[in-house]
Length: 196
Image (tube, rainbow, N blue to C red; front, side, top):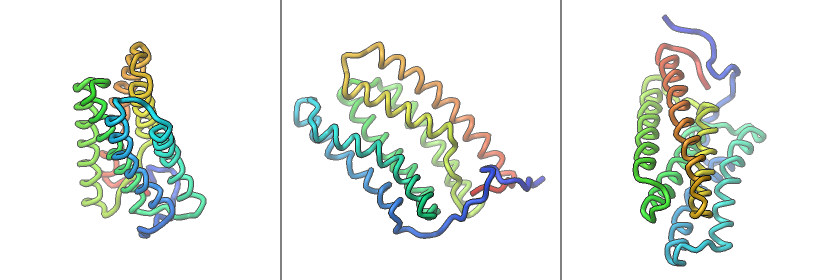
């Protein structure tokens, strides 16, 4: 039986534009990964002001793209794809590097990648089934932020092991919580619930 309510609790005018300011901000976030990894590795894993500036830009851009999309009324199908793809691209390579230099455990990296892969497959299925991409859930956004805090603690303060364990535990809990939140949303959309 098909549901008629909108799972996002509001109707948003979603455009088809690719070249918007918010989408360009999302794309620019991808560009920070290579210099951050290169500079950190070639500087003997020392933090420089440029690495710090690039990481700060990555964090700010993650909030800025959505803010710009809303205030300019440029929420787009492309943006719903580019923003999480930029997040997952950055997370994948920054966590891969952190695993390589042994500041984040391999099992954590594999858990994160496995979870993200299942969510991406589910999103692709929804896009194929309904012709559009579902927006991220709030628990997913919170999970990404805590993951980011964990990565920053491990990257900038590798000696603070107790903080790492605390943020790692919070990250794992939120990854599982948001995964089941996405699964619930996936099942509702698959059954016919409306979404933006």
